[in-house]
Amino acid sequence: MAKVAATLNLEPEVALKCLTGLDVGLLLVGSGGEVRYANPRAGEVLEVKPDDLVGQSVCDLLGLAADGPLSAGEKVWKDFSLPPTQILGQRGEKELTLQCRVLPLGKGSRSEGGVMLLEDVSESAEEREFQRNIDRFSSIGNLSAVFAHEIRNPLTGIRTTIQFVQTKLPDDAPLVEDLDDVIKELDRIEQFTTDLLQFARPKISELRQTNVNEVVEKVLGHVALRCSEMDIQVKWEPGADVPEIPLDFDALRQALLNIVLNALDAMPEGGLLRVTSSTRRYRTRRAVEIAVADTGTGIPEEVIEKIYDPFFTTRGAGGTGLGLSITLQIVKEHGGRIYLRNRPQGGVIFRLSFPVPEESEA
Ligand SMILES: Nc1ncnc2c1ncn2[C@@H]1O[C@H](COP(=O)(O)OP(=O)(O)OP(=O)(O)O)[C@@H](O)[C@H]1O
Ligand SMILES: [Mg+2]
Image (cartoon, protein in one colour):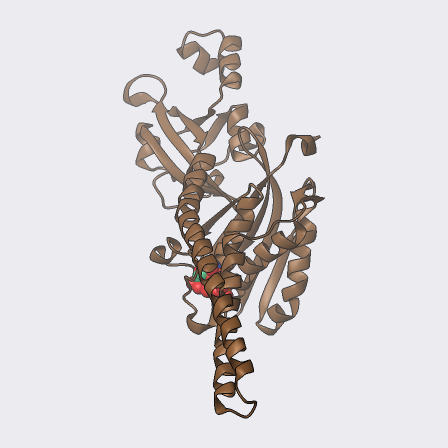
C-alpha cells in the first residue's frame, strides 16, 4: 500500500480512504495473477472477506478454468492490460457476471503489478435475460387466454344443443351413442382449454410469510421415492439464515416441483440432484435464492431460447411442455426471477430468486 501511495505521490492515509470508499471492486494483482490487496467492495462482490482474498489467484476466486486467459503467467498478467471485458465467473453455485478491467501500475514495461477493477453486473445481465423471456411469454400467454376463452363459450353452446337433440331421440336410437362420443370429445377440448387458462392466468392466492426451506423439503419429500428408484442421489443444502418472505406455498411448491421433475427427466441413468437455498445480497436489495442443479444431459443452446414457451417439449408425447411456462409465471407473480445455465461440468442449474421486502430484513 505504502509503495503504491508513494508512486502516486499520495499520502498513504488518503490513498487508503480512496480505495476503501470506492464503489468498484479493486484488486492489486501481482504478476502471477495473485491478489496482494483487495478493497471492501471487492470482498462484497466476491463474498469473501477482503483479507482472505490476499494470496489467492484471481482465476480460483472467479472459478475460471485454470488454462483460461486469466490464469497465472498469461499475457494479461505480463502486460497488465485488459480492456473492459465481461467475465462469467462462478463462486460455489452462484454465477457472477463481472465487468473487469486490468490496468498496469508504475511506468513502462517494468511494472510488476496492476489493478483489476471488478463490477458486479450480474443483476443487469440476468435482468435482461429474464425480461426477454417474459416478453416472449406475455404475448403467448395473452394469446392463449383469449384463445381459451373464445373456444370455451361456443363449446358450451354446442354441448347444450347436443344434449337437447339427445332428449328428442328415442332412447335406443344408435345416434344417441354417437352423440355421447361427441360429448366426450367436447369434454376433452374443455379440459384442454381449462389447462390453458390455468397456465395463462395462474392463481396466486394469499401470500404468507414462508421459509423457502420448508417448500424445498416438501418437494424433495414428494420425489424421494422416485429418486431412489432412478438411482439419483439428492443433496439438500438449506441456507441457515434464510429470512421468511411472502409466498403462496402451494404455488411455489408447484413451480419448484416442475423444475425438479425436469431435472429427474434429464438424468435417466441416475446422477446427482443438488438443491441449495441462500440469501444473496445485490447492490441495492437482498434476495432469497433456491438453486436446483442436476448432472443430466444439459440443454442445447437452440433449446434454451424456447424452453419457457408453452407447449415446447423435447419429450414427445411424455410432456405437455407447460411445466416451465407455469413455473415462470408463478415466479413472476411473486416478483421473483428465474435463471438457468448449463453447468461447465455438465447438467443444468436453475436458480429462483425472490426479493426480500425491507421489513423482513430486520
Ligand atoms: N434440467 C433439464 N435438463 C435438460 N433439459 C431440460 C431441463 N429442464 C427442462 N428441459 C427441457 O425443457 C423442455 C421444456 O420443459 P417443460 O417442463 O416446460 O416441459 P416438459 O417437461 O417437456 O413437459 P411438462 O409439461 O410435462 O413439464 C423439456 O422438454 C426439456 O427439453
Ligand atoms: Mg416439465
